Structures are given as structure tokens and as C-alpha cells.
Image (cartoon, rainbow, N blue to C red):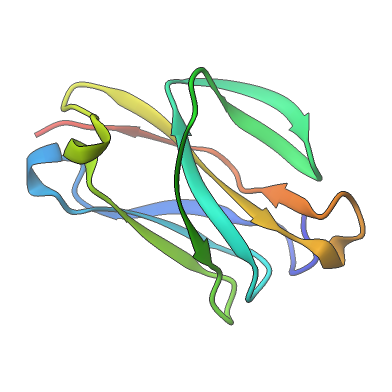
Length: 119
């Protein structure tokens, strides 16, 4: 949970075909008007971090910082080819966000999202 409700939940829209160049990460349920960022990695784990759990492992890659909208949502287009992701691979994604109103350490994480890329 976070200061806004039951917690931030990851999703995606678009296509998981790298050639389509139409993959977008989404999150809902994050505290409104806070900064956050999507990131990804090759493996999974569960480690307590901040006020939540880090679900990703391996060499993590951060995407640009975004601002959560007034309804608790955020969106990040991902150019899979530019990120070096290939069809046939599976990657794991998560969202880190500020949550100073929660009273803990001031940040939390969404659930994890596993995505398999294929034509």
C-alpha cells in the first residue's frame, strides 16, 4: 500500500513486437503529482526496499523520470529497439515513485511486470 491507496499497479499497452515500436509502460494507483521512473531488468527477486519490494534483479536499466498525473497514473513509451531489447527475450519492469506522505522512507515501488517480446 501507499499514501494514495492499495498500491501502484504496472501495466502495458501497444505491441510486444519490437519491430512495431509501440510498447508503452503504464502505472495506476501511485500518489498524484509525484516523480517516478520505470526501470527494467533481466531477472526477478523480492527484496524489501523503501516502503515496498524490489521485484527485479540483474543489471537494472532506468528510463527517464516522469510525473504521476493528478489521478495517480503515469505512462512511458519505450523504444524497445533503442533500448537493445530483442524479440525472443523476456524482461521484467517496475515503477519507483516518491511517496513522502506515507511517513516511511519516502518512496515505494509498484508490483512487477513480466513481458515477453515476440513478433
